[in-house]
Length: 191
Length: 338
Ligand SMILES: Cc1cc2nc3c(=O)[nH]c(=O)nc-3n(C[C@H](O)[C@H](O)[C@H](O)COP(=O)(O)OP(=O)(O)OC[C@H]3O[C@@H](n4cnc5c(N)ncnc54)[C@H](O)[C@@H]3O)c2cc1C
Ligand code: SF4
Ligand code: FES
Ligand code: FES
Image 1 (spheres, chains in turn brown, cyan):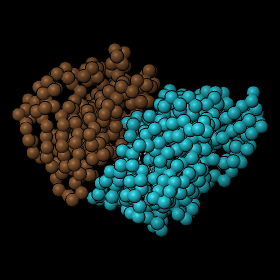
Image 2: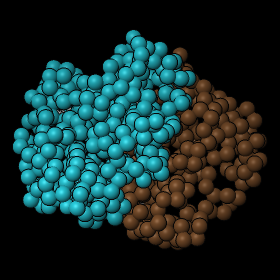
Image 3: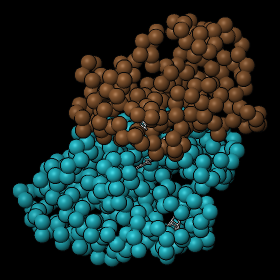
Image 4: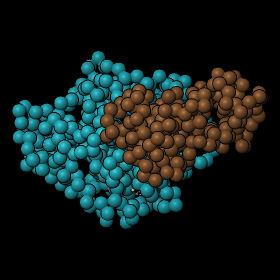
């Protein structure tokens, strides 16, 4: 991968205001470890940063972010749609990124756990998860939080039963479910 | 996963032209079943045609008073569509009983119809499986068969169709609109999925080269007396052991019209005209419902680990018919069984 213009890559850039990040962190490069004749070009905006990529079409969004874009906040649990650890938002909708081919999402706007905090302030759901002790090992947490962002945007949940059902796509091996529901209720109560 | 060529289709004509004559090409829509199976090397397309840009995302009223659902309408959009919630609540309920919200946000109407069995041997390329490899044998018959069929199975395959949505579509007598390079046709829902017979490798009567463009619902939606009852190993995010969709029309407590369909029990959503006939004109009560269950299950056959499903199905049918008759459909949120 080559970064054509990166005066503020890495940690420093994350301190910059969002609009600045977008302009200075435009990246162009061949992301595929092997350049196959099947490589496909795709443009994605990830957490406000535009990327132009040339990809082996087998690459999932999950692997693209973790292995090529160095965004390891999103976790891989099962790689088969069965756990929710890989949940991210595509154009605002929560999905399992392990069951996507990145090339199918040309032009999409992707938000991961790394993109939720604004100007150094935690997203209300991140804060609520801390307030309610809604994790133990934390491995499922990025997926839980992205899923909860999607849940709240969908505006369908009105009760704890609804939250439990609509969050059932996120498995927590540590069993932090009770506190996860409480954290989400705290944020829903405010919004 | 094997390497493949990726292509985008611009419209239906382009999609069917791209797939025509290429037996190793596959369409991809939501990707939630195809990509999973490609990772397992069960599906090995050499070309993947992305149809997500086709204009098949509308839900429209038909001149005949029904509803036409584009093949790319996502499960969650369909379940939450005001027309579906109001006029076809059994469909909304069945969709919400399946998978998770993340998966429903991805899964398409056409892909849901074509999702493949969850038989563990079908997924495991190290084991024989007639559905995956014709003539190799069926590992489930003498193996792990707890999730498998109790109706309509064959010596070649005892797998079940895993879809919840399709059970409601069978009940509603939907029609499947398909196109190919040689023209369009409409397939009745009952004719869409197949029983395994000697050709378990074929799940449906969709021909190679055909694309699903829409699913059409007739006007009758059973919006008053309906239910979708799904019994599974977890309360959510698990495939059905047995599920039952019901639509009734009552006159007082007399059953004027009745349909019910089962999921998790056969290679296709299971309806039985004789069992439905056993209900028409009779009083809606426990004895009537038990009779209908007995008729539907008259030829049921269990295997080493799934005979419990016969009794489970009997009880689910009675309970679901009662839920529908009382107008207390199963909630997919609170899991209490009314
Ligand atoms: C962990 C998990 C749990 C699940 N639980 C449930 C559950 O409880 N109940 C349930 O019902 N389902 C469940 N599902 C299955 C899910 O509903 C299906 O995977 C989904 O409906 C498939 O739709 P798709 O658009 O993603 O299909 P894709 O994966 O894109 O395609 C599936 C197949 O259909 C073909 N295809 C797609 N669209 C068309 C078209 N328009 N014309 C012709 N061919 C087409 C593709 O070529 C492919 O062969 C679960 C899935 C997972 C991963
Ligand atoms: S039941 Fe069908 S899918 Fe399962 S192993 Fe037998 S042939 Fe294969
Ligand atoms: S890693 Fe995607 S759902 Fe488990
Ligand atoms: S906190 Fe450990 S898996 Fe959820």
